[in-house]
Image (cartoon, rainbow, N blue to C red):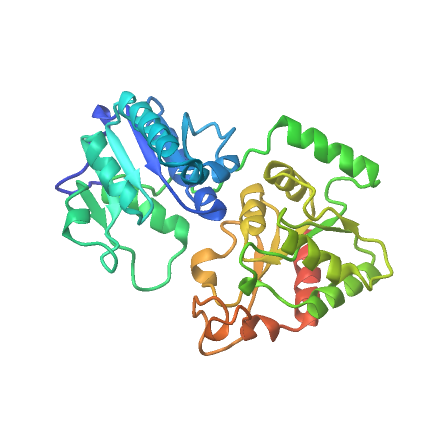
Amino acid sequence: MQNYLADEVDFSTVRRVLIIKLQHLGDVLLTTPVFSVLKHLYPGITVDALIYTETVPMLSGNPSVDIIHEVDRSWKKRGTLQLIKHERELLQQLKARKYDLVINFTDRLRAAWLTRFLNPRYSVSQKYSHKRGRWWMKSFTHLYSAPETPRHTVEIHLDALRRMGVLLLAADKKLSFAAGHEAELRINQLLADHHLKPLDYIVIHPTSRWMFKGWNHAGFAEVFRQLAVAGYKLVITSGPDKKEITYVEEILAKQNFEIINLAGKLTLKELGALIEKSSCFIGLDSIGMHMAAASGTPCIALFGPSDDKTWHPWQVRHEVITENYTCRPCKLDGCGGGKISECLQAIAPLRVVSAINNLLKAAG
């Protein structure tokens, strides 16, 4: 297909690419198709990443990612001199790579001044017109806009490549996540300890870093009960935060059937390995859901204030469960900012159980 883009990027002149994504875990994981597409279409180029330290597990071990540069947000806590030292070292590392192309996926001002400092031949970013002005616009050679109609975040990321003239008709857009050998060994041992086999259990991750995306104790407890009575083997997980662990403990407090509780006991890599070996994942709009999508594990995802059209499980069999509230997706931290989303609380447990049964039957 002929491309008539006047400022199309000549990738024959591109040797090294830096992708900037200074956001959260799921946001970083959703950039992985950009790395794999670039590596597939242009095998000779090097593709590096600049991300926050806590999100490194999302990209480490990925064969499409060459070098990961880290911004550690704890630098600020170590004093001004230490902050300056670390920032200077990072700039020197980046400058030494002599990037030909910078692809920015964050609205942070750091991305604009960093691109100016690196001075690549090409640079592309979303306009973020509602947040950034002329200085931002002048920091990049190529700009693109996200559509007003909802579109999945992966496609919006890939728009950066489209803007530069990259044709993606035959490209693989799947997410990718590498759990790694150590995580695989740990999960294999845990499964053996609990007499479980791959595809023999369901992972339920009832928490999120932002609990305004969360359902209620009674709803999850009833789902657990019905699934256990139906003979499903259940493994419960959560993040390491004490609030998440306590939330799981409160759900399980009155249960009188066997559930394997691994809440707060797994690394991100181990969580990914556990989910990959499961028959189904049940959870919220959270990193667990995105890791399930990356591993091809069927998903049941409960959505409230966040937009399922933008964040739903990507390219995997799934069912999104929502309630038909005219105000959703409001994208607020609970109704009125009160940290509780009524549209989520209104979801009936029977709908969740029915969706699980249907999804597993379809999987054979």
